[in-house]
Amino acid sequence: MGVFDSLRVSGSALGAERTRMDVIAENIANVETTRAGDGGPYRRHEVVLRAQAPPGSRGGTGVAVAEIVQDASPPKRIHRPGHPDADADGYLLMPNVDLPTEMADMALAARAYEANAAALRSGREMLQTALSILA
Image (cartoon, rainbow, N blue to C red; front, top):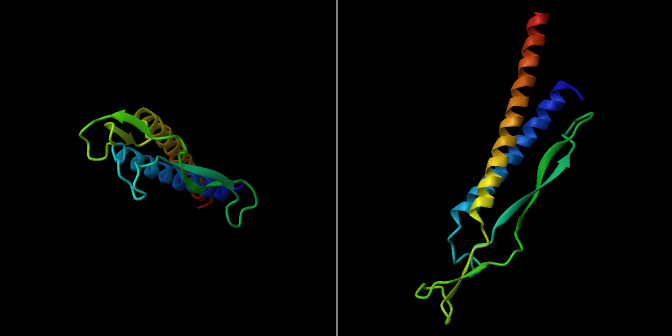
């Protein structure tokens, strides 16, 4: 694996973690959304990542977003009579988004992003040092 391969790997990871953070932010923004496009409550989304060989790579793998899927867990059912979306018994279906879980996932994605950014910086510094030695 060459220096440029490691830069491509870190770059692909930065893009994947940015997508994860975007999806987590969407989940957090919709934590109280009782009416989504399908008529029911908002459904939590998750990012599925897969390994991939960077184009033109002799070795190493990067990471790519394979798909963004809806969480299959059921919506939360709470008693809130008087809410416009409550049923006849006063129960309301709320999104299946758990705020502490989303915050933990956001922290993990942010740490992974920071680690890959640091690896990218280190690779760049190695290249700059090599060029200064040759010049």
